[in-house]
Amino acid sequence: MDFNDTPEEAAFRKEARAFLEKHLKPKGSERASRDRANMLEKAKAWQKTKAENKFAQITWPKEWGGRGGTAMQNVIWGQEESKFDAPTGPFAIGLGMCVPTVIAFGSDEHKERYVQKALMGEEIWCQLFSEPSAGSDVAGLKTRAVKDGDDWVINGQKVWTSGAHYSDYGILLVRTDPKVPKHKGLTMFIVDMKQPGVEVRPIHQASGGREFNEVYFTDVRIPDKDRLGDVGAGWKVALVTLMNERLAVGGSPGPDWAEIMEYARDHGSLSDQAFREKLADWYVAAQGYKLTKFRTQTALSRGQTPGPENSIGKIITANHLQDICNSAIEMQDHFGIINETDRMPGDAIFQQSFMWAPGLRIAGGTDEILKNIIAERVLGLPQDVRVDKDKPFDELKSG
Image (tube, rainbow, N blue to C red; front, side, top):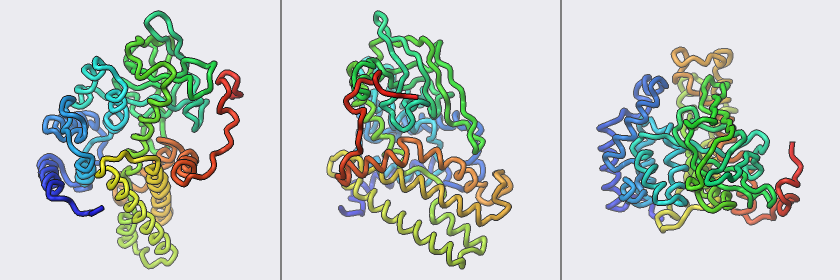
């Protein structure tokens, strides 16, 4: 493809940049931009401002409050917004993964009730997939839904649920039939996170943050009308959500090769031969990922849907973030153990990101799961042996 903007794309980029310059500060221009206090209120205000000016969801239909724009305009908006201190975190999962799933599989009543409020920043969503006993295998989940009249009764536990402690609604994947193979007995629902029987317990992370949660369901009732897709077709619905998730987290922010090079220059470590070799490796990998993203943009510009190759970006960015931050902390020697934003260079961004990076390697599929996807679905290599493929779920051994 031609990597330069077309005249129409250049005009949109100019419009987007002018809007962002009017409302936000450039990324990293002030310390307050990393202050997490009042983060939720700032994020809701920014989301409302974007929605009122048709910059909230570029590709969504106008009837649902979107701009009705092209996939390339969405890419351009993402490129420009990433240059500013935009408080988008609390809405990334809901608007990037959950609500698009509601639009794809929900009823007209669902869309009327939920889409506009999420777009305007009035309601926040989370995604309830992972479970303690399932590990990396989402299809091995055990949270049960049993039909009782017009309702389903939910019992079980989810874990690593980002943002559950401030979410209003979630999309919930549960087992509705244990008598069939594991992928065929799942169903997806919309769940009210504030209703009785839903208990959210934040997980204290090594970084000091509490972004992840355990969520317990005890006799929670969900009406059948809040089902997304057919009974037993939850895996198909989940795949749509997961593909959006891997595309979204593939470009996650954090210190990159340029930031550690700048730090090494200030620190006097740029002449170290071992560091220069690592820096060269990070740069080469970043350029390869950049070209891979261009391939995705090419598919989007041709009206195609990007496929499993987007898993490559998630693996590269998560591993490099961990490696870069580890090297920066080693460079700081004994000062590297100080994780205080007001005492360390760059507001301790290397320490903060080092603690967060392992979570990124799990989110949206572990490294091992994504490497399997790339091997089988991108490179066409033979599949792993799967002895549980055709067995009923309740006949499988589990811990």
